[in-house]
Length: 224
Image 1 (spheres, rainbow, N blue to C red):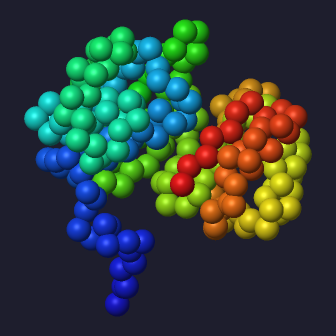
Image 2 (cartoon, rainbow, N blue to C red; image 1 turned 90 degrees about the horizontal axis):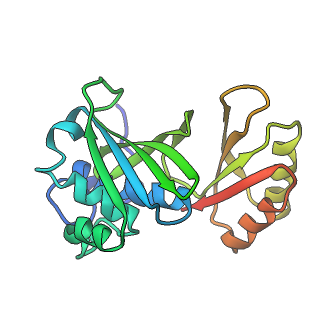
């Protein structure tokens, strides 16, 4: 008999949120917020490419306001979530929703294209149910980020030995790396390293800055 495992009671009863749907609202808000964190600041404009179920019901289920609320840094239970489109307009952030006809691997899929000045980033997220999400693509790189454990995302130059150097930093702090995902598009271009660790660091931001000081590291983002 298979034993089901849950990280918390919220995996069973669902998240605290502004409704109506954990998949279409809470999950969408979390996708937006995680994308904002990876991007590093509020973008000037965001294009949301919506697929399948998201494309068909994004207005009725509040997926649009949830995604924008997340980009503005709101949690799924933020009482201002329903005003996110108005707030974005007041802050001068342009938003565009594009329902797509293409088939996606998951029905609740969205790709965000964020722009600020000359900086641009695309991220694909999936709402998998109960408010849980996965990030599956970053700037064309296939990744697998479920946010179940403390995670560092490192964008790096494609050089030998970087992972060994970064691993030594975690070892120095007594942190065990549970999962490593490395990806790149072509040889010589920037790559992405996802490091999921077993325990929360004593000083996550200090550790992030220490990794950032390594040669050939372009950027570092921490999630918990």
